[in-house]
Length: 142
Image 1 (cartoon, rainbow, N blue to C red):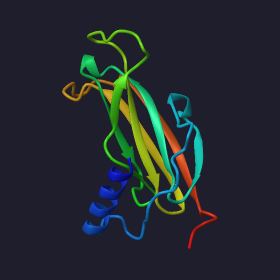
Image 2 (image 1 turned 30 degrees about the horizontal axis):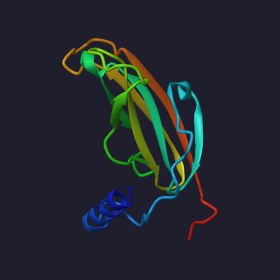
Image 3 (image 1 turned 90 degrees about the vertical axis):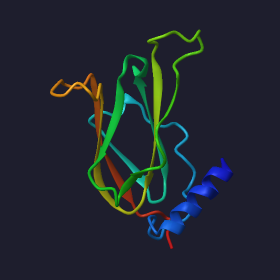
Image 4 (image 1 turned 120 degrees about the horizontal axis):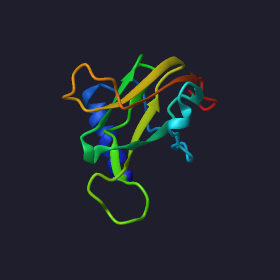
């Protein structure tokens, strides 16, 4: 984890893509799930948080994420996937997609995620989650 974070910071600082961000604060321990739909969450600057969503990846579905203002909230790496539950792995079984985000600066933005089969043009998504993130000034900001 530390090696990954250090590598991410080196890439970020070397590319100039992180503005003045330094290492993020600790990640939100509880994380979010689909029940955040329609709600607003509040986090301080430089806070990592996760969103875990059930996924039918084995059936060809994938989640796509739209962020209304990536200067306020951004993705922190690609989503990860794991099997849901501890039972046997089954073809077509349910998995969990985990998205990690990081807050960057104070403001408010919308996140919208849709689960769909990308090749099915004009077909409504199988599922969607939309919520607002309000980023406040951190008490530890410089």
